[in-house]
Image (cartoon, rainbow, N blue to C red):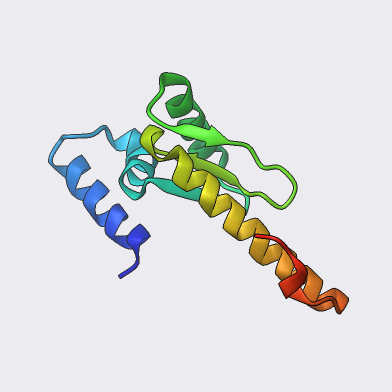
Length: 109
């Protein structure tokens, strides 16, 4: 079971027990996971739910920039979100370098 699956199960239990509103289940999943990187389009309804959570301070957000993916995170996990974004960008740069015929070891972390 992945961390995301475990977080989803925990969030569903919290909603069923009335501890968290059903319409904010995606926010709860991210708060449980700590960090969620968004690398593909997400439904408009989910995005508006996450944006509202950012406005109320339940979540933080780092916008997409170049190879760095968009990230939503628990307010206490900003550093972890930054590190995960960097790792994804570094991995993408290594893949690009490999395709371009350059030595990926030349890239800086």
